[in-house]
Length: 478
Image (cartoon, rainbow, N blue to C red; front, side, top):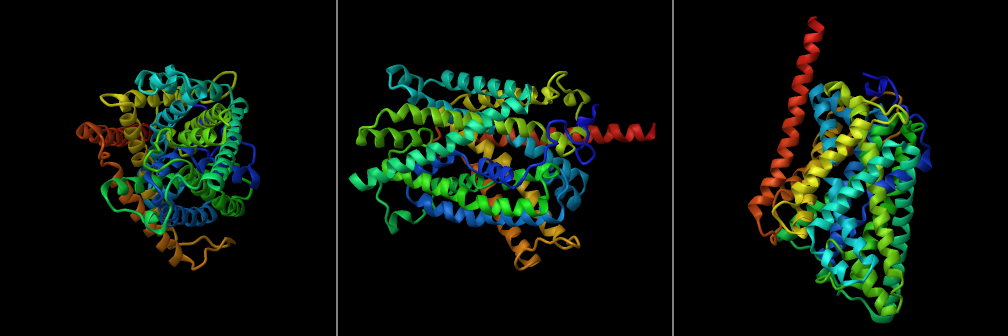
């Protein structure tokens, strides 16, 4: 096995050796912490989503930020989330945390690409585009092509793949500015399309509203991902807290201002979780006589989503090496491309599994049903590692590292309180995400796919750990 395959606490992957400064980490937090599809989902839920965004930030983002800042300051080891879990609860917990974080991103890619495919249809107003909106094959093919593009770029090296990621970041920023500008002009000239009052802002507690809450909790995650790059961040004890503090208001503005802009432009009852952003651009542009901006916005959404897939596909493929999960995987998993020195086997395997999720999510349901199932799979799988993160914060805060200059106001009391809030939010969101939407035609099939896929990922991880541990013991005895 090559040196790249060892845990990066021992050696650095060849393409991840350049140190990241404060600006780099700030931009990374903004990219990792926001996703346009959640703006559309929130707008479809109505004005109360604005309050839910705020509550979600207090119940998930704030606890996560406090725990990440504390743990990054006291344990800045390369491997972050994996290292914290391993220090607190032992090798098996560490392995399972790294495994879950890696596999949890696999259903994320097809869900994001479904969102991109739907919004890409607004590049043209032809009848063919409207027909494709009801054609599952189009969404499947788009998702597969998107995965292929991101994989090829990442195989050829981060230098080229970074261009797609950067383009996605610029496109995302430009789109939010465009939507906000349209909403402001529409509001001044026509008023708000959605009635926004104290009554409509009050969140509901019905099943459908509670299911939405779990998605918002997931949307506020992302701050933890920088922990895997501790070895590439200059002075992580200082850089991570400062960058996260600077990124927090920007992340909140993207979500809250973006959602409010869609609500002002499109009546909440007509907003769609898959097409909401482009609905807002289209209807706003028609009112203002600026229909030429519609294909531009559609292109920006598509590029933003493809950029996110490219960025996450490349970083997630390196998680097994960062977290030491590779020690339990077959040696072939660590194979590097002979020319570009990238983890080609990991990238291809990851894209292949993500492609399977495309077909799994679509099987036996409509395009909208597949999108909802993919979101549920994603929410559950991504949130599970946070059970370990918040629990590790509680345990490790009992024995702080001497000499650390970063201080959390209130000390351990604050860390434990935030961790408990985060644990409760995470556990509740996981339970809610397993419940199918009220409008899901085949609820039993949806539950089977959501719970079954999550259980399968867990079982595979446990099996790999058991086989790897047995193999290691045999080597020691020999």
